Length: 450
Ligand code: TYD
Ligand code: MG
Image (tube, rainbow, N blue to C red; front, side, top):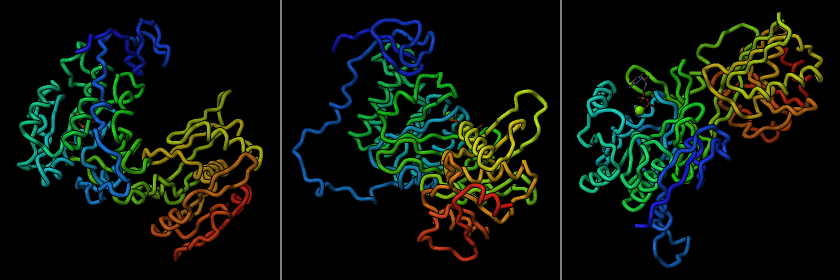
């Protein structure tokens, strides 16, 4: 074995340095460098490279039916259609968001196709059993192992020969090759590297759970994003039962796919129709509410935007946006002031995406401006109307991606009118029951809406 060297690793971002620094030169965090032993990294890439001859791409055998279904359609969707044999999948998220619950439910289904091993390094076997009882899961092919030593885990895998594996969580297991504590950057990195080699050599699909805190304080998932094949993040607002599983990286499918779940007393329930859910509590007739057909990956989702604009009683007015980038909102407010001559300077402005969803695409610009105007003018927007379009700095409304998907979803949910960029209407197949109004300028849109 090569001589172990000492390095200083930043527990925040994973930066490594041969000497100590008070402040990480990479992420600027204070006091985050910890002395660790550095292994000549288990030469992950060397172990993976099969000695072989070059072969023609066309002759490589891989069929889409090789993907294994987890029984949870929403999880399969984020994986790009199911689990690819031998893949290493990271499921990250805040503590308590439901990662263990999700994987336990998925594994109960998977156990029908072969032995599924759930390594629980955080909770005792009895705790997992209690959760399984609550979820009403009972299957003879689901095995639990309460173990934190990676060497022991690997030994058990050789004996049991599982077809699926979960490691819950990567921050609590350790390899005895390293002295540093479980959860430190080098442990997390080394353990994941070894799990990767195992996954590829045995063709064993492996899920690893990783906790992330809001400020990324715990070393972990972020440093191993580039090692694994797929990264899924499980997110949600603790105040709401909805949970969104988001694909951040996927070597075997598209990113930006989402799966929607609802956390209930008996575990996670799939939400196959998120639009209906997000619109369920929408007020019928009040100013400051509008529906926007947003797109999450390849999936249209109708969500409600709410705004409250009221005269500020203090010197500096408040600007708060929840679920939308606040810089984008500042820009839209400036366009409203300059191009529509709406005076918002002395107003407190609050904007909220109902249901705890986050919207990141520019296609919601026009709807955000309309809802601000609606609250400011105290005028109701027709509840059967949906609005979308990107807005440029000169107040022009620009075309957006996939208008047909958005219009179709709106029509399906009973909306009868849609205001959208004129350029998006071209070649658009109009579904039954909805009328489309194309516009070029924000002021034109507001004239039509109010
Ligand atoms: P858990 O899967 O333990 O989260 P993680 O592994 O991400 O830390 O889920 C914990 C939360 O989920 C806990 O706050 C309780 C809630 N929960 C339910 O509401 N219903 C259920 O059936 C289960 C199992 C958990
Ligand atoms: Mg857990």
